[in-house]
Image (cartoon, rainbow, N blue to C red):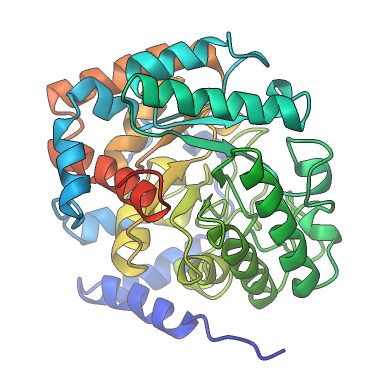
Length: 408
């Protein structure tokens, strides 16, 4: 099978140009040398801690004002008609409690115009029940004239799937080749689409390490090009069904010292190593048509190991938007992960993520959703989250929904 060209050299060159333009190539080399020494985890204090939030790239490259993406008139008009409260609600991707149509998430959808709902194992009893819930969510949105919501799940395969008994049958790590992975992704896309699901938080795009890292049990391979082919094939399978994908966990957690579900996770790779290894599958997935990307909570050299990627302007704006030219939806990983909650509150994390460049925040626990919503709403009212940032986030979401035929 001919190996496709994923533009690795162009990506590396873009990173070099970014820092070279500021005359700091020597600084990057020094940072890379320093990054080989693993910093203490106490550096991961987050926005409310003592460590500086100003990243290396932010100090040498002036931050540009975010410009809202171009949009068809129908999408722009829809965005302009939404009052602030509903615009903020579009930024939220939420989990819920229950398995029936009496779950409170559906009344919240009617009231607030939530951006999306995630269906997990605790919400699932079988295919018919899931189809009934997704159909009900769509009816609620239509009845109350809300923007059609994302209806997501996490279905990475085998033991890493939330909806038991549905494809893909195998975890990525258990799949022998890309052709088989593509076939399983096609089966999953067809099954989920038939049940009313319109997107997945995946595929898994982390590159494993040798002899093994915290994501070995799920990662497809320790070869960046093999993971790239896997991620691209998976994205294409879902895109053919007009379904949203969010390859994870940008900019790569395969070399982390810890899974983010367990606590702060350090990825001690310099920028050039990220470009030639961890970013390769994400570039391939985006080139294959992914309308989203899931931002992980790892700590990287770009922010002196002080700020999670999901709150990093350097990684979400400078790297993802400017260098990789991504114009889709940047979704945070679950803010209930220990990598976040060990150092800060979920409402503070939600504000910091949106302010830094995330378009949607995923919060699985209903107990934190109301406080997080109010925190983001207040930050938007006060100007802490600039109007240009909110405009861009809402348009990214609505454009993706239009491209995948949810609105328009």
